[in-house]
Length: 143
Image (cartoon, rainbow, N blue to C red; front, side, top):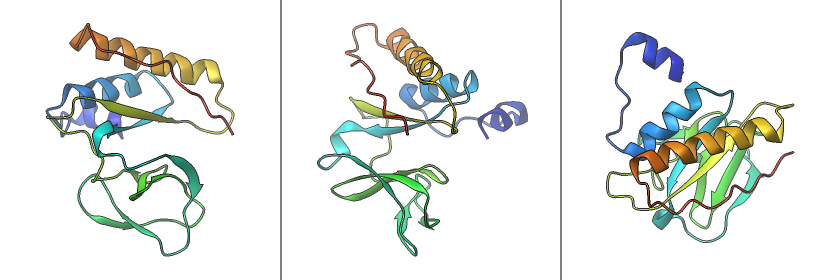
């Protein structure tokens, strides 16, 4: 969908440089990324599977019924990202966001090297905008 946005001439729907960096990194990679305002996260994160009839609010602000079996990430407040439907509204990156958490999603069979290269590219783009940004090393969970 990112490539379609660029080819159609539609603008990226965020004024946040963090979102633009995430979008640019995705154009060069088979890896999708979800970005979240670190200050909006509630408690520990866990990777999980969506349950039948489970609903969350997509980044657009619209409620979305999740597909049973979709891989999701949750915090104490609920689902923050879905592989199929993307990041949530509550933890979305805003203009005023001062810290972010990025999650990377890739197809089965993708190597850790490809995911690490994507995250390195994203970190480099963030540092271009904020040279003094503290970027933690990625933690890869492959399954």
